[in-house]
Every structure is written in structure tokens, then in C-alpha cells.
Amino acid sequence: MTSPERFPERSGPAPVAVATIPPGRVEATGPPTPSRRSRRRRTRRWWIWLDAITLLGFGIRIATVLGRPDRRPGGDAYYYHYAANLLVEGHGFIDPFQYLKNHHHVVQTADWPPLFVLVLAATSVVGLKSFFAHRVWCCIIGAATVTVCGVTGRAVGGRRAGLIAAFLVAVYPNIWMSNELALSETISPLLVALVLLCAYRFWKQPRMRRMVLLGAVMGVAMLGRDELALLVPFIVVPVALVAPMPWRRRVALAGTGTLVALVVIAPWVGYNMSRLERPTLISSGLGITLASANCGVTWSGPFEGYWALECAPHAKIDRHADGSVQSAQGQAYALRYISQHKDRFWRVELARLGRGFGFFHPLQQIGLDSFVETRPYHWAVLGLGMYYGLAALALGGTVVLRRRGVPVFPLWAVGLDVVFTMLVSFGDTRYRTPFEVSLVLLAAVALDAWWGRRGAEPDADDLPRRTAAYGTPRPVPPGTPVSAGAGT
Image 1 (spheres, rainbow, N blue to C red):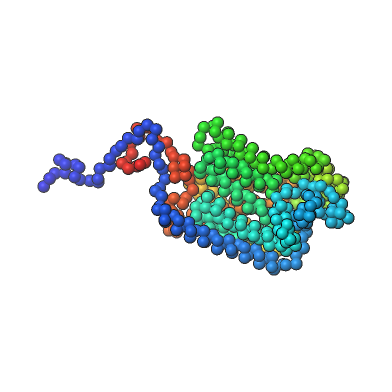
Image 2 (tube, one colour):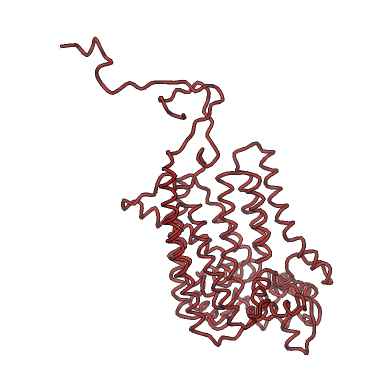
């Protein structure tokens, strides 16, 4: 019998050939990709599921409209509905309250950003001018939001996480209620989802054209909700600065994204400058908001941290002046009131955050939402319960993404944006809507990870990561030994 000591190559595991990576060689990291046919089959199946969830979301939304077909516009919805019709009739962006209730008195205004008015005008221009038609159109936009959130969820956490995110958006009352009410929060989830989608796609493949797209989407989002302008320093700039490339290139990308966003809003800014008495950028609504949120009624008592009609008369706003003048008058009054009541400032700020994020008199806030915005009370209670659940799951989703090496700051940056909005204005449930998109995406990642632990792990190529497969290979030091076949 041959001794294994004399011929060691005949015993033990098969030998591993060792090669040396030449200088400048790049090792491809990440799992092998499946066949092209297999990928197409899985992608087709994924889109079928997403389409089905989108139809579910549309069905829920249209059912709420048909359940209250005779609803009349009020509050912000009154402005958006009639401003869209007046725009189509050739009156420009004017105050519909003054025009329709004060003998066709024309007051130029930019109290609200223009995008949602333009969106509603898309139906008015073809003759569908009723409030019912605008609400149905909002349901279609809401269904599109389901689809985009699904695609964004796939970019953040994989295919299954994308479908979970789409389902949550489809059924989540705090999102679909704004569609039925025809409020601008109809488009804010869609805009935020698009910004996050572009941000994560840039993170995977940091290229100039993807930064240009992110900047353009960011500009459109600013025209939809002016407070989303904070996402430029919170998302656009940081995602460029963490790109794996020389610092000069990173700064150039950050500057390009910011510049593109400014170029997108420039025509609207120029239009405002030409027609309003005082310099106005995206909107002139801040002053009126401050005037309605800063008086004795909202700084103490049952409405602490909210807004009240009783506040506005104290500002002595000239309703016949244009929107920029009214804003300046309201802002001046609010700053005077705040300076005279500094002792309660931080208490009121905490009350605003508590109201907006559902931790300060949450049931009373739901009652106010039901009375002021005519939100369905019982659906709002269900939405509050789901919100608490999503917030808890979002913490788990954050941990999962960090372990995978996927950045979470874009998702939480939306929450920081909402915090600033409430601190400056007041606490309101619908102001939280942009952040609820982030909560849905993070919760979907957590649920997907839990599902995976039960034996349904996603395909390795399905998890989002910055690897060679996504265009960012990992350099390997020269002379590093690797097993034969690695990196080939």
C-alpha cells in the first residue's frame, strides 16, 4: 500500500491553485448573476404582482370617492380646485377666494407652489372641471404613487421589499385619504418616492447623468411642496459627497445636482418676481401660515401646537394686497408675537412636533383633522394605529439596511425635513405625509428580512449594494493571492 506521507498530493482535499493578481487588476465582487432568461422571467412576474397591487390601490381610492360623491371643496382643496379652473380660463395664478367671493377681484398670489394646480389643470383643460373629476384624477395619481413606491422599494431593499412597500402604500389610510380630499399631499408621496429612487440609483452607480436626473426631480419636487427644498442639502449634496471618487469629482456632482434643481424652478421664480410686489421664490404662503399659528389660542390650551382662525385677525393682513405683501405682514406679526412670548417657545415647538408625529393628544388631533379637513374619523384612527406599527418596523428596517451596507440617511432625511416644517409652522397630521413614505420603505425592508428568516431568502443579486455588478468594482492590492478562477 502506498504511504500517504510519501505522496501527500494523493490524500486530503484537492489542492487550490494560487495566482497573483497583477498590479492594477480589479477583483469583481458580488455573487454570480443568474441567466438572462431567468432574470427576465422573474422581472416579468414581479411587474405582474406590482400591477395587481396598483389596481388594488386604485380600487381603494376610487371607492372612497364614490362613497362621498357629493363632497364640496373646502380649505386648501378649494384653492387648488378653483385655481386650476381659473388658470385654464386664462386668469393666471390668482387668489380664487377673492375672485369668486369678492366680485371677481383679482389678487395675484403664490401662497401655494404651482405644481398641484398644474396637475389638476390637466383635467380642466379637457373639460373635466368638476371637483368630482379632480378627485378621480387624484386617485389615478395615487395609484401611480403605489407603482413608484414599489420600484423605489426594490431599489432600496430588493424585489420582495418593493412589493411589500407598494402594498403598504396601497392600503395605508394616511396616504390615500389625501387623494379623496384632493389635497396637495396627493403628489408629495409620489415626489418623495421619485427623489429617493433617483438618490439610490445614483448611490449604486454614481454618474453625472444620474445626478442630473436627481437634480431635475428635486426641482420638480420643490415646485410641488416648497419645504422639500431642504432635501437638496439633506439628500442631493450628501449622496454626491459619499460617492467613491476623488473629492473634486464629488463636489462637481453636488454642485451639478443643486444647479439643475435651481434651473428647474427658475421660470416659476422669474414669473413671481415679475408679478408680485415683494421678492418671492417658490411660494409666499409662509407669512399667512405663521400668522395663523402664533397667538394665544395656539400657544396654550387645547389647541397648543396647532393653528386657529382666531390668530389671523391679529396680524391685520390686507386681503386686497398681493400674496407677497400679505405674507410679509403675517410674518412680521408672528415674529413680534414670538419675541414677546419667548418663555413658552420651546414648549410650543415640542407640542407641534408631538401633534405632527402622533404623540401629543393624538385622538384630539384626529378629531381636528376630521372637523377641519373632513377626514373620515374611523379610517384616521386606523391610520394612526398603522403609523405606530410602521414607525416601529422602520427601526428594524434601518438596522437591516445598515448591516447590508445600504445608506439610510436619504430615508431619514425626509423625516428631518418634516421636523423643520412643523417647527416653523405647526403640527398637522398631513404634514407628516412625506416622511410616511420613508417609514413604509423601511418597514418593507424589515418585513422582507423577517420573511427571509422563515426560509424565503431573496436572490443574492436582488439585494441592492454598491458592487462591481452595479458599476463600482473594488480595487485589490497588487500581489494579493486568490483562488484560481476568482476575479476572472
